[in-house]
Image (tube, rainbow, N blue to C red; front, side, top):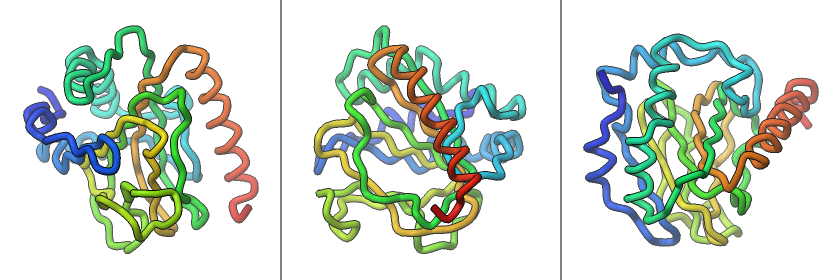
Length: 207
């Protein structure tokens, strides 16, 4: 049985201000969230980790396979009006957030589509809610704010205005990030970068 509510994804209109994005609160079906949650990789450190470096259960693996499958690729192509044929995917997972995380930034030009899927069954902190920003200058100037609650998806097409960030939060904050990128060289480079970044954060957590 599918864990993804493709009908909800397809029915959600694409927002175009300040850039192309959509938010789907129940991207993961409510009756599947518990199993995916139980199978989520146990990540004790801050940073983003390529899935190849993590251990996880069957339900999580099945969800990732579905996420990277042809039906979802076609849905993203149709939603964003982009050809993803021959564009590889890269997936990482996070388990914890540090105080310095969430600063305003834009993704690199090698990332075509960014997809964030949150897996936090409860969220009480004021911080940690990703903001779709209208500029790179302020977290207060935003078009949308996304609570990182389990099953919620935020996806956007990268361009020179696609700034985002969140207020400070510290503690567990679980999120899956999927990117379609320009080529395989990007995948290799980004995996090396994530490994190094995660190592630095584990050794120097206050840096």
